[in-house]
Length: 69
Image 1 (cartoon, helix red, strand yellow):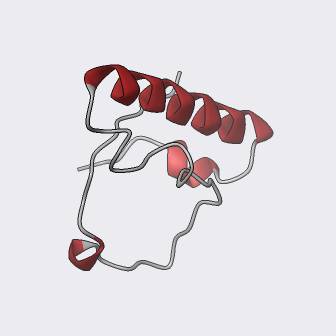
Image 2 (cartoon, rainbow, N blue to C red):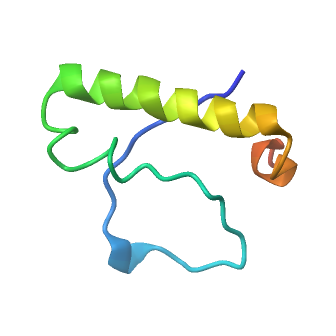
């Protein structure tokens, strides 16, 4: 089971890392999708579905492991 959440953040406040995950969420999660509660629930379900598809492929297992801190 994959737990997903959707949050709007400023790109200027993100810290770059060497890890990437190839999941395109730009068409699902947008500032317009987060305005109403109904659209946010739809975006959350679609995000969860895409993460679960990525998890089932078996690639990028490091992304889905529990953090140890």
